[in-house]
Image (cartoon, rainbow, N blue to C red; front, side):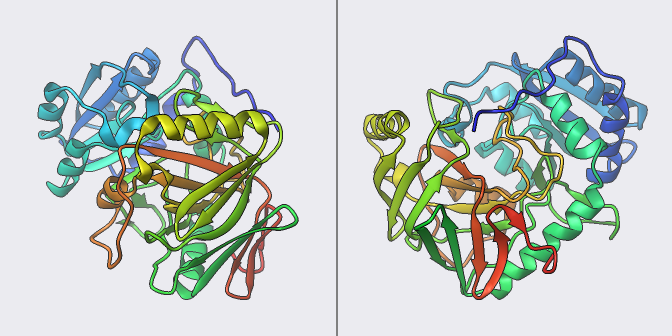
Length: 362
């Protein structure tokens, strides 16, 4: 399956204004007098910066935009990227950071620990089609229903002892999750129904419930029939599935599609970082009905698909969670893959059946 093409406009859409209001009001709970820092780079459309700055000002906030250099390697190298000290200095003043250009970074981690909130409408990197993604998955979606489903799925993960994912006819990946708590992956800081904050860091589009995976636990095989995110190729859609084999949380064999198996193997060998093969380090299920398989950073978590991360989880987990009772993987890179028609079983419950979420459970 190829990547789908989102709408790429050269001007701001009128829907961008009500969308931005929803994000600030219903997802960030922005209050008058708060300080908003919008971080972007040259990949962010100028009108996106203006819309977020202007709406924050209209709501009584003090809003500033700072544009930095685009980091090397895109999202894959976020854990080891180096950022301008001027951006870091500005982040120390912010109550709310709108992140269009960073993602995972130590200064973001530090801002969170100081009590700031961070919302990334684009998972750290904004592109020309980011507004289209957000309009579809937030403005034109019942995000309250999405959050309710995400909360139920997170609860099912918390109750389960084993997660099994079946792809294709014979590829089975199994993970011991007896001591793992499910996570909503809400994609919002504020829950408008409950009237309270549920996170201090989040990225859109909502939502992607799942788990952080303890180091060394995944065993088995998976067929990757969706997208693959690694450097230097941004999002690749292999024409035939990749087959990945894991032993005790380490990627040991790469097969399937010959071209992309070769590319991935070559890239991993050139890294000279064995920890880049650790994983999966997170497992998340797409629950947004308007998500598409596009080039949006971290794609859009297509409904019923599963996205898994590889390599580093130490920085991400520190940003999104309190300290966890198990060891997580640490690496200079974080890369991802997605499978579109998985069957996901939590103990004996079928949560997802060949890409279709079990509505009787959630």
